[in-house]
Length: 118
Figure 1 (tube, rainbow, N blue to C red):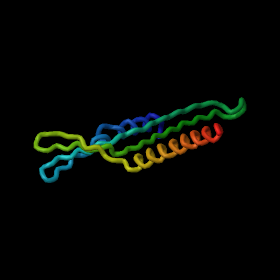
Figure 2: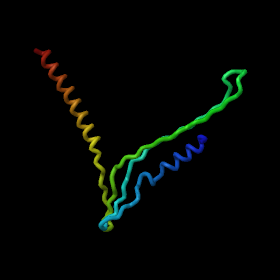
Figure 3: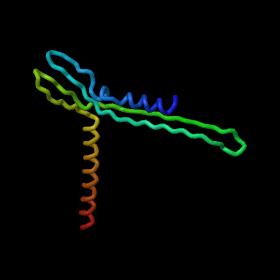
């Protein structure tokens, strides 16, 4: 596969269809799932001789990757649209852990300063 084909496949992968899922209809509601999609692609190539006596050589390569995570859903109910965000429990827990560590470090600094005063 040449670099141009890789880039074209990556471009086709990162489309609006990846961000907004297929609408789901249930009990009179229409739900449109939404995701945050990110990715990247790269390719390169070259040619040359390793030394004057060696035959010429060439090479090319590339790759792409991406990720998606749910961010919420649009709910359409009797002509009204509202946004319902997805709750990422892992991020909430990580945030709480960071706050706890920073708080403990601050408390340690305060206690050390007080003990030095005497």
